[in-house]
Amino acid sequence: MEFDFDHPTGQYGFSTRLALENHWTLYFTQSAILEYKKFMFLAATNNEMVSPSEIVDIVWHQHLIFTNSYSDLCKLLDKRIEHIPSTHNRIDFEKFKIAKERTKKLYENLFGTQPREIWYYENELDSLNFDKSKYEISKLRKMFLWYSIFLAFPICWIIFPVLIQIQNPDFLLFYILSFGLIILFLEFYIRRSLISLYENIKSNSILRNLTAFELVFFKENKLEVVVHGVVNNLIKNKKVIILTNGKLQLIDEDVVDNAYENCIIEIMKEYDTMSYKFLCIAAMQKPIFEQLRKGVYRIRERISSSKEFISVMILSMIVLGSLLSILFSRFIAGIWRDKPVVFLLLAIIAIVVITSYYLDRILNLMFTKIIPSYFIAEVRESNKNETSWEWNYFLYGNVILASSFVPITNYDSNVSWANNSSSSGSCSSSCGSSCGSSCGGCGGD
Image (cartoon, rainbow, N blue to C red; front, side, top):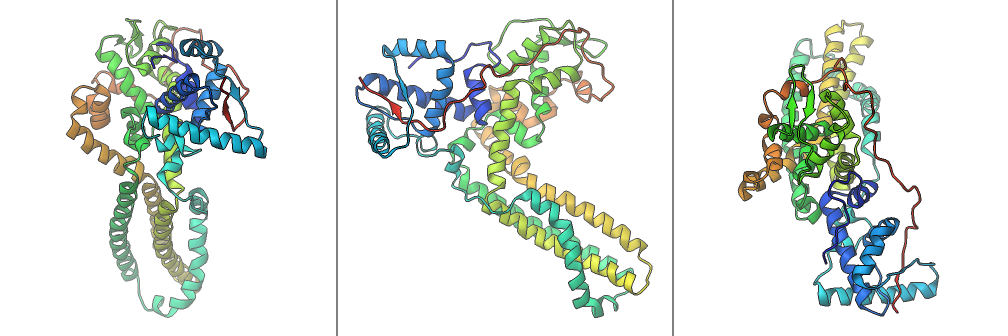
């Protein structure tokens, strides 16, 4: 069914708002809208009650707020589709249960199998089939060093006879060598475990259909890097030029097919010239870029809070914490025996910094390395990069940026903002109210 929910140049239209408020990826947002269209067609062509899934109902609630668009859709369907909320009583429960079963049969007769992530789950990321861990990474990270210090006291008591027999610098040399070897074995285990984890979920349609920009954000974990790519393409296509003072000027206001580029164009229309720092900050605050960030972070948080991922982190913390505790126990023994511990203290500081960095690396490895590496192989095999600058940017990053543009992306706090004093403003939600979380369906005539 042909029906456009968005204005071509709108910065905060239906799709963007739907994705932003629910932290959905671009693919899932479009899929949910498509399923909503199918549902509305079923509602319009059947006199008996049909019922949406939780995801479709979210789209429906959102569309009801866009009253003109909703009226236009009903006119196209030649039927006013009324939304009937559930009262959660027993009679309604049975009525809506029958309606859901009827909807499934009607859907499968016309459209085939219902997409599971939209019709079978209240939260689409439940389709990843992860059990949530009872532990939180943030809390584990905060307590890691304290647990290591606390553990040092019993370890010192147990291995004290051994500690006093090993002289410096033999202890430090042996410890550093052992630390390096254990890190190598730990790295092998972590990579193997995380790759195995991703192998189990990579066929999920939400992950399989991540966009090039979503993957750039996964890979770099910086939203400004996405803005770099968008602005660079505008410069390459001579819609924006770099002036001799390093500022940017829009010379072609015509809209293009890329919504992110159109967002940059709309920002720049308000100014004669702009510093890139100002443009980048303004762009990252726009809904279309904010939606991308939130959608990716939500996937990241779901994976990193799973039992499978947390178990890898916990084992890594146990190994690294035990190594730190041995070093702390050596320090305690040295203080107890009134031995010089200056070099030992410096070694402790260095090992703590390295360990903290390594734990952060483990936390990011899945998202900055493993997932992007799978997509890099697939993109090169499918030759997507031959027709899309977005995929080229994902593959090659800063390598494809214009040589004149690269220096101004490294802006600092001293870079001046735009010449114009007028503000471009920011989009905000036009409606603060929301509908209830559950819905029964729509009535038939």
